[in-house]
Length: 289
Image 1: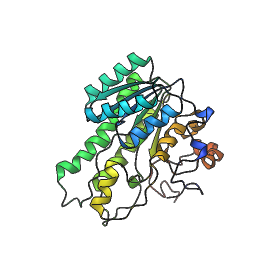
Image 2: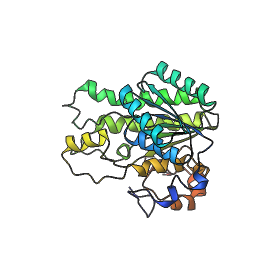
Image 3: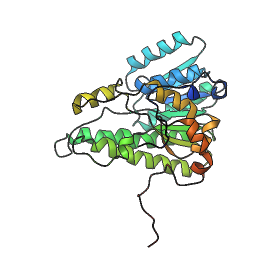
Image 4: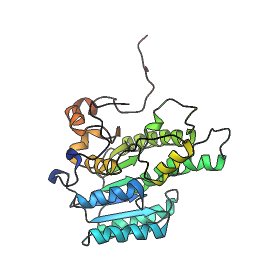
């Protein structure tokens, strides 16, 4: 699944949050699913890049409070807002966005890092309610966050959605993840439409890599019984800071991998921006016959 010659598994210099041209010092960041895992790492990355206005949502109030305390201890001058709300709760999510906007004055970057623990079971054997939960979180959740971003984020905000490469792989009976893969596939298309419908926004879907230290990653390893090489959790976190920068404007409405080398991507920015590359489609179609 390579798109650049260089594939990264750890953070590297070109996406370092400490780079002056990646500074988010003037920006407010809203992270859905920001209490743990990649969402929490992303909050730390944006704080490292200079942002001092961070809003986080998550389902577990105690985990949110602990994360906020940790962020506040490391960045005493930051304003960290937390909202205990499930991503599928539209009224609660809208209220959280509204309060964050009122507190910060504007929302410049929205990151949807919400996810549900992966169900690794064949469809015929899976609990259908648990299987459908991945669609509720993945698809309805993406729509809920997109609608809130349209209503409360700045007209030129960056909206970053955490997708998965599993949406692109051929089905594999040895790794039965139909609910997760199919829901993420649908959500990426939802975000592509959302970007097309709101051309002032910059919408980007990002595959974060395989991060086995997260709750979902640990469950995937446990349920699959397979060995998984893990990417560093800070690779997607730092990549998202870069994706929110002016350097990444050419990725508007695209689907990219955090592992791809950004210098190689920048070298092809005109080709990427002006072509259907990095959009979901049917291979070989359309074709002149």
